[in-house]
Image (cartoon, rainbow, N blue to C red; front, side, top):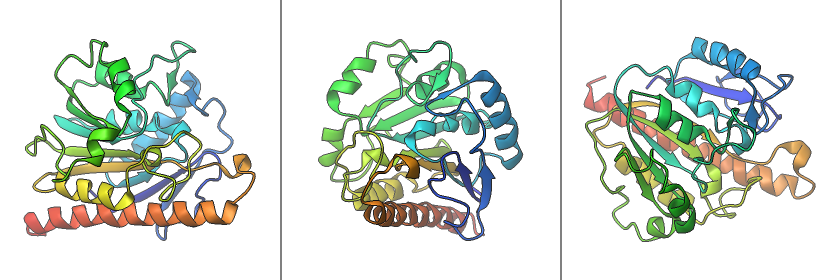
Length: 258
């Protein structure tokens, strides 16, 4: 994984000065992107994202834009595995067919991406996992789900069925975290930030890291109150996750003698 930090801005959530030395991409005037992605917007986003590549760490705005992960994964041309940390399954067929959405992107990726060999979906409540278990893609053996309840009792911090021989891409929606560690515009889970970082460190041992992305937060125009507290909490969590993933990259470099 390269060192690049990429910030994709659709709502003004993070802005171009949040991370020193980052590459800032301003999509605030691009229509057809909030929650659902129109075909025209998808064409533009694929083109622009392809110029930056899939390596590095990408901040994707709020959870409404989690579908952007699909565009990064489409660039990977070797067998790989994907670890998704999210309070939602993102495997719901969109209500506005056939548009890609933040709630359907993982289902679409499982259907379409032939290089994706294994998905670890960690964080949805047990009942949401049961809802998607009937899907053909869920029964293919490529999807391993770890519920919110199971995460709370995961003492070893190692995901079940982990396959360290496959290169790894990481995707995090901070709504998987409790409100003491993140404030988002979706209902949230209960995972603690410190434990998420421990799980990431365990997953990264001996694994080639292809790239990572992080979404979550509350767009400024939708936040009516507690702006300073929300910004403080979310900024801290962004920094923690950034440092955690960068540490994984350094461990990989050390293994490779770089």
